[in-house]
Amino acid sequence: MENVESRDGSSLTHESTQLECRRVLLTSVSDFPGPLAAFVEITKWAVQKGDHVYIGLWADKTIFSDSCSITARWLARLIRIETPHESVKRVLENVFRNNDKVNFIELPKNRSGRYHIARGRRISIEELQSQTFMYDGESYAIGASLIDGTRKSLSSATFRRTIINKFKDSYEGLVTEVTNIIKTNGIDTVVAFNGRRAHDHAILVAAELCKSRTEIYEMGATNSHLDLYSHGTHDRNALQKRMKMESQKLSHSELAFAQEWFTNRVQHLNTEANRFIKKQITGEGICAVENKKDIVYFVSSLDELASIGPEWGSPFGTQEKALKLINQLIEERPDFRLVVREHPFMGQMDRKSLTNWREFLASLESTTVIKADSSVDSYELINSAHAVISFGSTAGIEASYMGVPTLLIAPSFYDDLGVCEIAKNEKELREWLLNPKLPDNSLAGCQAYANFMLNRGTFVKGMEVLSPLHATSSLGLIGIPSNWKRPLIMVENRMRRMFW
Image (tube, rainbow, N blue to C red; front, side, top):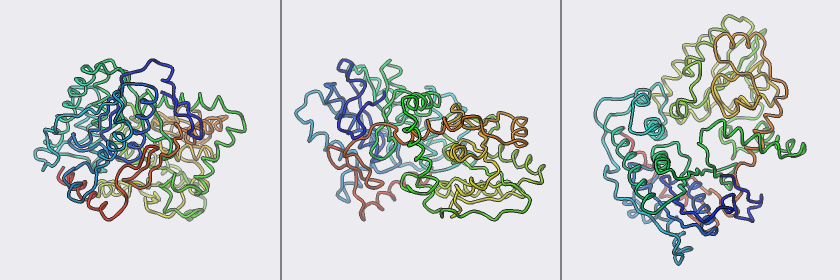
């Protein structure tokens, strides 16, 4: 569902205001402060419209919250704080306590418990994803939660059989319970966050089984933007269709203004929005090699690639296989040097996964590697490159905007915008390396992408993320303020996943 609120947030109306009042189930199994603030705003919209609203705040009723953060009420009581969900419930109860169209829906106590020393055979993510579970997409959703909780890569992510079974029981139990809630209360619309991780995915499956309309919410262009839509989170076609449609409504001057999204990133003018470049020094490059042209490969985050679904598979296989082939082809060209820039977030990956990855990179002879925490400026790398290759990284479209020939070798959120060439096999890759180029009029696709990233969603006055566990909504503060108690929360969060 597309929001049509004014840019300054003065009007909290949206597309569904033209529909009859609905019976809406608003759910949250995540305790990220931004999505919880968005949850509060969506509740406010639905109540203003006159919908019957059923609120499900369930992060502490699952095996662990889909955001891998605090939901342990015992710890909250011990250090005298509210869990994020408790603060949201308090805010909503204070505002809507006399509204008989607002109801809080509780789930039975989580039967599986929240702390487990996992046992049994280790199962890889690839093996998990190949298994047939009760519901379509269940194995990938469980894998996404496991990967998010541990920051492991596809090649090294293995988990004990018992923890996978715990997730399976938790997922399938939630499908059953939400299905019953939908049928019992005559719910016609179900709203969930993101939809990629295990429990959010289970909620959407329950809605599909009941033939209820589904809507997904997450943060938009900024921490004060809320995006609410009815397509899948990783539906590339739907997202790019939105990009194209929204750009068609803009004048030439507005499209030119949208390009500031790229300009701000290239010039490091907004490191809060582009947190991956915080450690990079503007203009810092690498030493050139005489008589050699740099082909720069931008690595996509390994943990994310391990959990986003089979439709995102590259024709070249894994990123490691693709890089091995690229290295082989570049070794045939004495005038080329391969430069590999690690994704900055990879520094936070599981240690074993990162070690395995760097051992692989070390096996690529004559390749220059720029590590995740390097101060080398990614945009200076692009600027001095002969060509750029991407496995779906945003750096690919940034290079296209900067006028550098760009090749895409895996699905991405810009693969249908005409911003770069796409190779689907070794022959096409080899031919492109012989003559790197950009498609004609690639700027139009870059503008459509930039406009979407600059304005995605609805600006909500009063909604802002203040810290990793603390946010404000137009109805009040939620979450946990940044103070000495936060490290205790992080420790509890980590302990739950220590033995997976």
